[in-house]
Length: 488
Image (cartoon, rainbow, N blue to C red; front, side, top):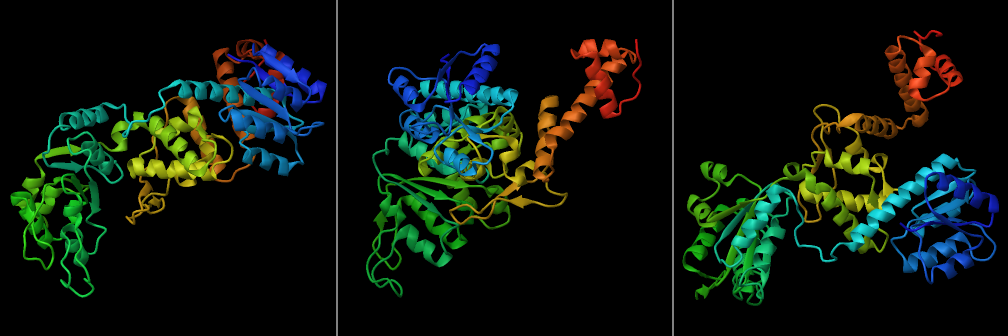
């Protein structure tokens, strides 16, 4: 592991940080100004950079900008004064990992540097991984079954019906089926049948002749012709109007269709892949979907698992979407803390992968700092809605209905740390202040009470078991109002 670099013109600050980090067995290297640090970057790099913001010559912001230009993944912690809010804002805009406000608590400073160190090491392992991102991400067994099915269908032209909840990635799978098929060099045409008005859908699918209806001033090729020799993906097929289902059945049966207003049959050499989130069997029973068309489409069925069935993939997907979102906005990717990632993985996320992607876009824009904690997540995720209510995220860009953000209280993470994190998140989201002091007192009280029970009320013995001094436990017992303690 590389050393931590400290850049500060104040020798006392450098000395204090050096000694504190040495006690943690962390190697350091110090510089009195930004110029010397920049010179050192020509032949070496740190694991983490800690820099004062105001120094003679180049400032900490100048150093931050120069370092980020060449080493965008390096965590940089800026030391600033409490009153210098503009500088703190500038440091975040420049890509700082976080900032320390003077005068700072040395233990908090070391904890922040350790957090930056963990992120730096994690970033290094990510950079060492293969750069190419697969078209569909997933390590869960349910997704491995999907990948195997795509592989088996790779050399086939058979019709495929993809089912699964909204937001599970049905179009991605359709594109993968096309990409790995013999038709890969030909067009892939997608059409959401639920998004096209009924009176326009026929023309969209099959095209029209000039003069076929008012406004048809020229012949127009439909999606079937556009997809010739390639793949036509019909999304939300369950919403197709009943009369158009008959025309689609004819194309699938004999491979010919007529443009609207046309009299000459047009041959269609197209592989059809359909998708729906609805129960087509039930729609057939309800008389809303043709049974013969259902059987034509349901040659090979591919069911996509919901995100609830592959929650182990949430960290992988979240990191991917955070990087993708940051790239689109031209900013440094945000990082999820371990506790925030565990919390996120415990949520239902009924909007599935699409909801997770929307959430990562929100985090990239709205979350403060580079490392995202539970308290930084949207309140509709960290706070369970009252019974009988549902909270919503924004409607998808494709015009579909808003996706419920959370229908039930998220499962409690395992272990007392998970419970503590949820309690802290709930208090912070409710706008409470002095959360650290409140929870800290409850934590100390619980420990001391448990130790006193274990030692049958013997205060000195309890202090020894807890690893604190006799005077400390006496003071805490008084401050916290704990009963049942006695002298030895």
